Length: 176
Ligand SMILES: CC(C)(COP(=O)(O)OP(=O)(O)OC[C@H]1O[C@@H](n2cnc3c(N)ncnc32)[C@H](O)[C@@H]1OP(=O)(O)O)[C@@H](O)C(=O)NCCC(=O)NCCS
Image (cartoon, rainbow, N blue to C red; front, side):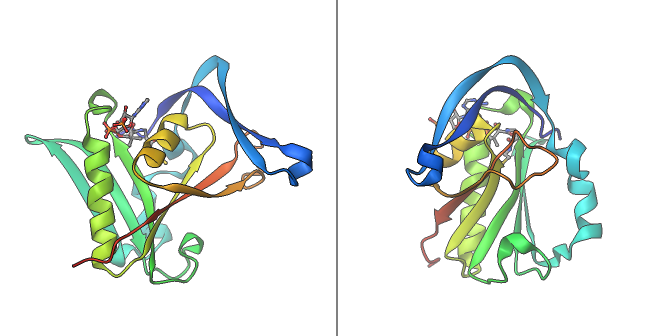
């Protein structure tokens, strides 16, 4: 299932007064839209099991009838996964993707809610999500699902100097 999306706009990170006045995200349309494909950069889901112990991870599938239209992966309690910060009360929404023809019809929201429930059931108090300033639809999607922006790292990707890392956090209610 492709994760690729078209970049039509980006969120420029503006450092006011060199950063003393805070960082501002300013949306800008790109002159020449382009396709961004995370899988082409890191090999995608097929490579996870070789890189990490995924035995504690959650894998969720969205179906429409018998057709698979989306999926999500949640990293949890896994040594060597820096994003987890060595904490057991934090889960990372490692991957979320909906088939291009099925986007915008609620599958992503359903997967997100299921990921929240999965993490809360394991005692997590927060879910963390990494995205980039070139993925404006995902940023808007996470903000609309109750996530707050916790960190902007402008220099996280030395190989992609025009991209900034954005870390979103969703507070989770304790599971019943
Ligand atoms: C981001 C993604 C998972 C959302 O899934 P989805 O099934 O399209 O989302 P939904 O149909 O549940 O839409 C939820 C909301 O996001 C908005 N939205 C989703 N995709 C959008 C897009 N491409 N452009 C604008 N808005 C979008 C919807 O309008 C909707 O708005 P609302 O919050 O006002 O209801 C999906 O677009 C996708 O697979 N994108 C490519 C992969 C990707 O970027 N993954 C995240 C990596 S961090």
